[in-house]
Length: 369
Image (cartoon, rainbow, N blue to C red; front, side, top):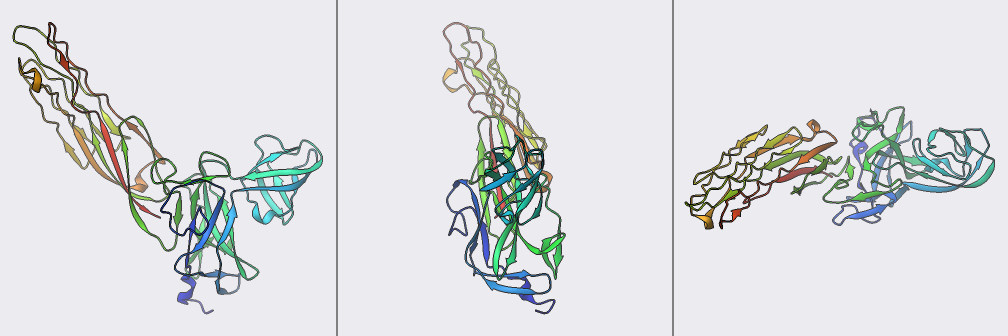
């Protein structure tokens, strides 16, 4: 095939965590394999080292967890395996005569790998190999004979990409141009597994380099926590709303104290908003304010007028709105939800009124899947 041919770009499939599913419309839990599934077509162009070939492929899969019969030699880091083509550097290794925290340090040949720690005994037993939890895997396709096969490379960190180069303009693995880059997959909190969700830490955990689709996802926070960036997040729009202050209704013949001030609500260092103050004796408390956002809004004050116990209100908090490109975000961001102000002490028979609203954060993201 001549250099510059547009067929180099051919890839009719997509990566997923479920057989027969080219586009996730339902959540997937505890998947143990990654799939390349025909989407536009079953055709894909692969480089053999001397020429490109466009082949038609059926669905292919590769496991995140593999068990094989292996032979250990006491004090030796070389492990004899049944098939190293489905094993990869960085996988955790467990089994008889395998020390705790052992990983695959390198692949020697089709039946031998090198372990990070020496074997503790001699024998032939089953060993289990798993990719570590909360890690990222770059996925590559290559020719095995005349068919499509998949290969995985463990990243050093979630958002530290495996080094790529190009072959005739097509992204391939640096040092092995026969491996065509197809996308990225995140594992979940369990070794050898991956989830695909639409909210939470493991949402949109598969990124496709080809046949990409764009979606909007929304998460809301009414309590403090952690926001995790997805490999698919491109842009994030956050709306940070601080809580209101507490209120009280005050009878003219009684003496009371203002309600408490609402706390600060924030999304990392990117946007924060201050809660409103408690309403005073017949007048509003201080207004809440926003900060750090593209748009910052001051919370309006409402009066808890003397004797007007039925309509007493606290001050709503400030508000901060910001749009963020994903590349400027950390892999996680701390979410802090400020507490609403407590009701004031009214004394006598008049009851204090609680804050009208709690803090809230709405995070809406655009994802490329």
